[in-house]
Length: 374
Ligand SMILES: Cc1ncc(COP(=O)(O)O)c(C=O)c1O
Image (cartoon, rainbow, N blue to C red; front, side, top):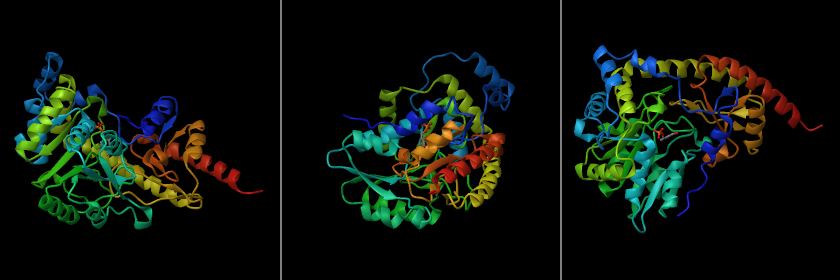
């Protein structure tokens, strides 16, 4: 079994701690433990400071599951807590890995989507989120790829790295298509509900879909390593519970309590992320208009990342490398199998975003001057 190199994480690990402005991160405003605890009532703060560092439950702590169920408006039984959305993806792909099976996933996309099924020897079919198509997630293209051996179709809504979204009616039609054929429809919603266009509803409302979400992206408290699945089918849930028990047993008790506090105050935590993302996206729009001779882009409809490209069509890795040397960290598009693009996160730099773009702007100028033939 082979796991392909995780190019994105290798890149981030190399540069993230030494580059002055981080425009590669896909998260939002940073929270500290005291800031999260300040959102809690006295009893919860007391519970946090005095909890025993024991195993939690494989399905997730009862009170955390209740908080998730209330926010997602689903029965508490439908909630399976995971160690990040990463573990949910691992359980899903592991369980889909039957001989002859295929799965359908987006490209560009979060590397784990393809690395897991490929390592497990499952045929991996890709639908393209193309710039020529305005980064539309096309349900017809997805359906054309499916056959009797398709076990799983994954939609990432809002989509990392493009910020594309799939509308409610299209998602419902895809749900109908997959339900009729016994295909597992997975909606990775780690950026829900951060929107810059028409908001979309969580797939948690759909009886045959599996929604996965986390505390890392929209909530931006990745350090608690908490994610969850909403699964209404008890048999499937039992399999996810078993997979989880083998993979990691349970979460850290500390992470679960902090996650619960943030979820109970989701209006405040998600509100801050939305505010920072909306404000910075406006700044980014003016910036991209000024850079249009060198950079192309499509404004994201959701999430906290954009996926611009070099209009020259060249591979963006040397561009990202040179930008990193000037203190600007971007993520090269080859990390997403789309080399002429790069990912730009607009919510993690917070109040520093304008300064970061000033620096990035002078870098783009010097880069394009170098590119002009003598
Ligand atoms: C689309 C998507 N899904 C899932 C994950 C996994 O996140 P985590 O394990 O932190 O919840 C990521 C992380 O980058 C992601 O971008």
